Length: 103
Image (cartoon, rainbow, N blue to C red; front, top):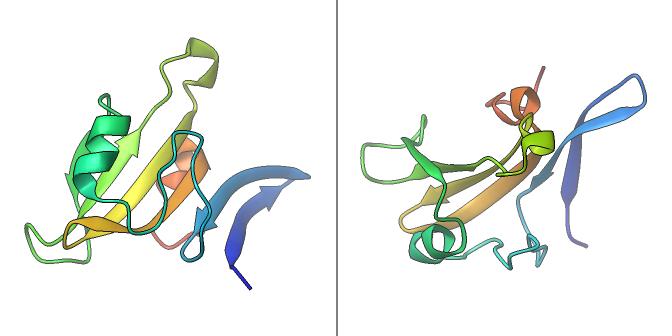
């Protein structure tokens, strides 16, 4: 069975969803094992940050903020290691930015 973790449910509102295995895909078609190059092609507006737990150049946080003004508080974040996606999460920016999944 595929695991999807639901994080940060407060006051009956879902704030974040984490995907760390399986065949789940974003609307644009990205998922686990998608290459960094493909993520950059699918989401040209992304921001790249070093992965906080990996050595320099070994992985990244690829952050995507929707262009629509009404979605400005949301974010999609891909974690990569050695050139491909290892997990991704989406939801409210403040919840997505929490590294350990805790608010």
